[in-house]
Amino acid sequence: MANSNNTSKASNPIGIFDSGIGGLTVATAIKDLLPNEKLIYFGDTAHLPYGEKSADAIKYYGIRISQFLLEQHCKLIVIACNTASAQAYETIKDFVGNKAIVVNVIDPVVEEVARHAQNKHVGVIATKGTIRSDIYARKLKAARKGLEVSSLATPLLVSMIEEGFFNNKISRAVIHSYLEKPKLKKIDSLILACTHFPLIKPEIEEYYNHRMRIVDSAGVVAKEIAAILKKKHLETRLKNPKHRFYVSDYTDSFEKSTRFFFKGKLKLEKADIWK
Image 1: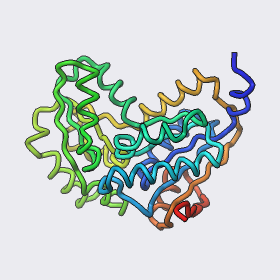
Image 2 (image 1 turned 120 degrees about the horizontal axis):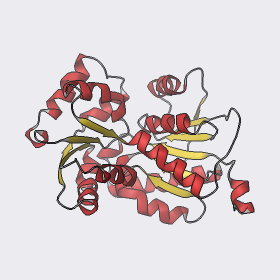
Image 3 (image 1 turned 180 degrees about the horizontal axis):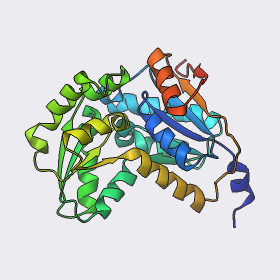
């Protein structure tokens, strides 16, 4: 039976943050699976991309953003960024404590991939920060003995996507140049270990003639969140919840992307949390 504290927290929002538009793929998956939940999204556009930043800087950003989301009374915080999940999850979890549930985008994907016995050689593409941490290789090999993992940093992809370059000749040329690398030649599945990458998933599938199993975190993480809320008795039944979108620095491309994902006119708010 749910206790009174959980009942009162159930109507509180889910907080989601990323360095830019990538986390909107996760937010969209959560919205589609849990349409009654209110979402608060924070895009740290002043500091993107996180993949080029130091671990200490990312931990600092994560703590400040988490504090902001706690001030909005979020019941659950999603680190919708693989780099921040890899380098700051434990720090953020310790900081938040029992004030909210913290979910990263790496562990649900690792569990999903490890469950499929047919996966023998998994490829991982991500930012420099995520690949440098080696977190996917370590966790996948711990979850499934004998699993081979090949990781490749693809640093141009995030900036390319943030600037709106996808589904065109430029994006295809950049994507193909990465996927043709010898390191990815013998893989049987590919993890898109960056929440920006679902936006180029169709182009990646096209490169492999739709014969490669492509795993992105958005849908997997949304299912994980649904399971957590149900287990913790934190589901809500809000009608037409009003989502809010914050950025640390306004960009026209971010507002356009937000409207693309969430359909219609939306108010983009600037939150200067670095003062």
